Amino acid sequence: MKLIVAVVQDQDSNRLSSALTKSDFRNTKLASTGGFLRAGNTTFLMGVEDDLVSKALDLIRDNCRSRDQMVAPVSPMGGNADSYIPYPIEVEVGGATVFVLPIEQFHHF
Ligand code: 2BA
Image 1 (cartoon, rainbow, N blue to C red):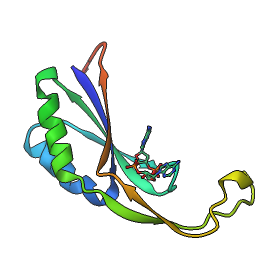
Image 2: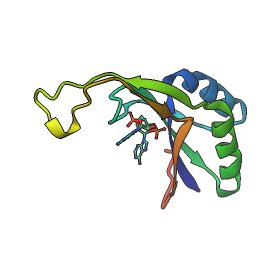
Image 3: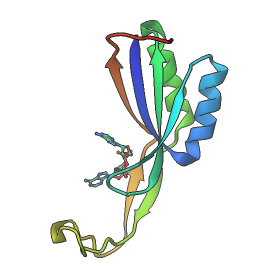
Image 4: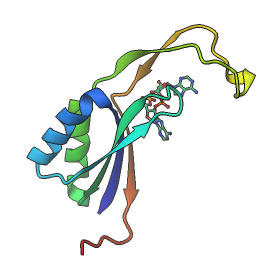
């Protein structure tokens, strides 16, 4: 069994959750915040049998789109001046950032 951790954009989370549930993949959604954009995103936790991992990855790939997002200027006040961004820049976010981890034990009490 594997634990899939997938960070997706909020705009994709309902569609992905529905697609996963429809295909019988149990999933948990956590509200999360990206360290770079400091904007909300959604982290999915999924416990998946080994032979179903690739099907789960296909569903994530099919339901998460990459988008261009503007990064607003960030004030250096209270922070490090090295990280100061004086003007808006555009970055491409997602579709999804996915980690697949081995599970040592799984209990469902
Ligand atoms: P954020 O950290 O808010 O990053 C949003 C997007 O900003 C990233 O999209 C990437 O295109 C860009 N970005 C991030 N750090 C950058 C930097 N130092 N310089 C220039 N551009 C940078 P994605 O790569 O698709 O990541 C989307 C979200 O996935 C991230 O949001 C973060 O919440 C998560 N994530 C990505 N890589 C991760 C990792 N190695 N560990 C944990 N979470 C990660």
